[in-house]
Length: 280
Image (cartoon, rainbow, N blue to C red; front, side, top):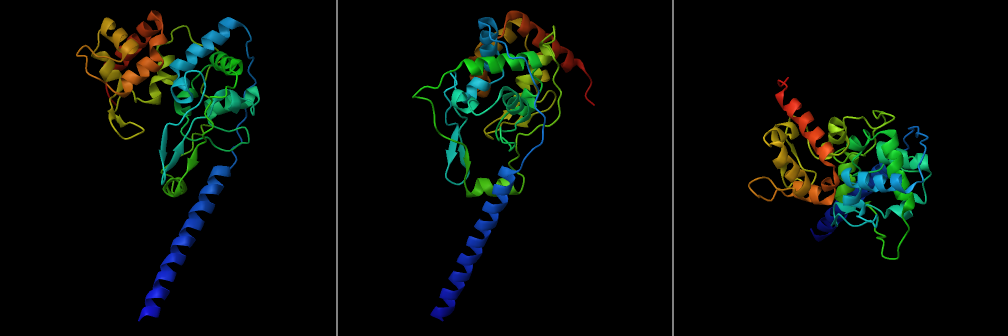
């Protein structure tokens, strides 16, 4: 009887090892899979005003929320089974990229070697205009690596690799080009597209990426604010009631507070119009 138990345990162990091998090999193929997306040749400015505007845009787009306010990188999440989400220090990462490759990473979610990036908000960033993308790249190029920069790298644990293999975890690759050559004069919809849509849908709720809260429809919520209250929301993340809105407060303090009065007014006007549209 004992020998059959031993053989059974060996059989179970063999199945587990085989499953792990399949998961690792399959997920590794997905991680290394190449994506043939042409990079755009942008004219990268060198002047101080463009670099400063790139730094401001990197706040609005959320780049500095993940990669650090000074581009130092960091650790967003770590779990032995799921893996580690660690946006890299920008100066060190950019050293391995040409300017066109940086554009492709920011707007299309593709690494310098053609493989996919993960947990990169390209669904929103692909709307960044060519001139604004060039300004962000100019800011990134102005950064210098520091001894204190994070050296953590994103990796996948066994469960993370299994979820990647079955398609629950999706790469950030967005092949289509939807951006314009220059920033539009009316920036309301434009900023919503490249910034706000990283978390919100316009007309429907959605769960947050961490699954901890439901993100309300942007148009409906914004229509409930008059302009002074909306400006306060965008600058502080606080509604008139003073309630802590969690992610919205973090987004406002992290980057949205640098929006100009004119930009906030245009965003508010655009969202009010969207809220008035009949639902399809």
